[in-house]
Amino acid sequence: MLESDDNNQSLELLFKPKNVVIYRVSRTVDFFVKGFKRQGFNLENLYLVSSKEESFLGLKCYKSIDEIPVDKIDLLILSIRRDLLVQALQEVLSKKKVDFIHIFTAGTGEFDKTGTEIEYKIKEILDDYKNTRSIGPNCMGIYSPRGKTAYYSSFPEEHGNIGLIFQSGDLHSKMIKFGSRRYHLRFSIGVSIGNCVDIQISEVLHYLNDDKDTDVICVYFEGISPIHKNEGKHLFKILKGMKKPVLFMRGGKTERGQTAVLSHTGSMATKKNIWNAVFKQTPIIEASSSLDELIDDTYLFSSYFKRFKRLEREIEYPSNKRVLIILWSGGFGILATDTLIEMGFEVPHFKGETLEKLTNIYPIRVGSLSNPLDLPFVTYQKELVDVTKAAIDENISLIILETDAWKDIEGRRFKGYYNNLLEIRDYVEKQNKTMMIILHQYPSESGKIFVDMLLKDNFLVYPSLEAAAKSFLKLYEYGKKFEGLQNK
Image (cartoon, rainbow, N blue to C red; front, top):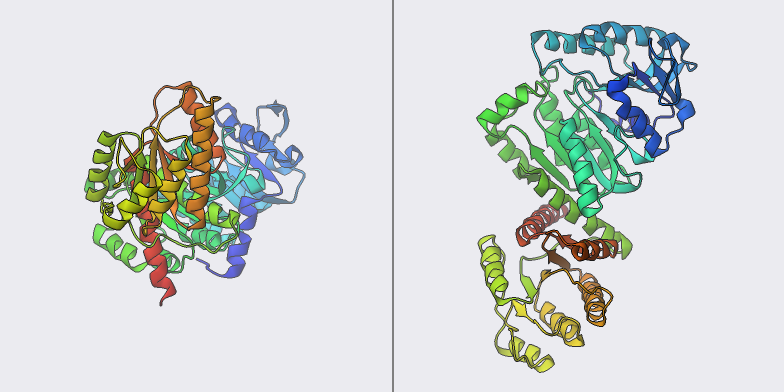
């Protein structure tokens, strides 16, 4: 395996190919063509090979690889029965220079002994053609807005700051679709990498570590291909040198889960104690076995980096876990306080001089100023902003504001409330602190409109207190690791 800067640079064509060949195209893989069309890929440089079709989705088909009118193929998508895979690979490479191959074909090392033998033969062929690299087999492939490539037409066209490396194509697809629709997440590069017969996760991590568009990286890892038994050492070395947050989800943590890994990518899962040491000795953050939580965490990290870039400031991570809670309900405040304290947060109880300062700003009659701030009748009044600003100054790192949908979003009170949220948010960001809005999700047209407004204006909006708090803890954990690296 190569880890040089030359190799790092060479991956660029994988993510930004000038031409693509799909061999062989059929109705079962029409999503590839639809994905390229949606992204705006130059269809004059998209070549389809089919022995049966004259045209496919409006594009000309070529009968064989010989008819393709280019000598060099940047990206070849190989979609063919596994029993023909080795023969097809040899045939194509003997006739065309190919930079990258995406082996879509499944039923190889994850399936049976014959499939494993096919993978070893693939590796032998690639070793003979040293300038040709491959992802897969058994993978969905590349999503790259910069290269106008995607394997699903439902993927966003806009560029983002999140890099993905997943050994599961379905989880990779769900991460993109759910994340983009839930939080408007946008991605720089996504790789469904599959069984890793050639290109390894460590190589893509190395590439993304230097990619200017990528701020945060998510990895779904099942294990190491038996063909690359030294990959563990390479991966550890790369992880130790990562300059960006890596949210690392491991599939197969349990003994039963490891059995499932073998039938999915045919990888060798590593032991729990080894991974505990890896997480301890590297700056990466272990993600839980929940795609929803990974999406929540990625949302915070992505937004955090974008915020500091928008403000043109050097990034600062939370210095403590002290929380200010703002809400309309005393009952929710009690539950929120218990939940946060059980999770390891500090919810300072305002009293003495602090409470007197807050009372002088707003002599409350109903509710509380002790933290949580229970302010049921001043949501749209100036006092909400003034009290919140004063409370934030008490060495608070996280502000959690619980709210609900408003029926009259055109009314004076809602507009006053929304302006208050904007002013509080701006003050929080100037103090390099974090504000999260909890807006519970249930069937509500006005609620959907409210969420869309908040997301458009760069608020952090979570559907539950627990989701928000867990994500903040990941950010805090990374900040401490980052601080430790800076002090070495």
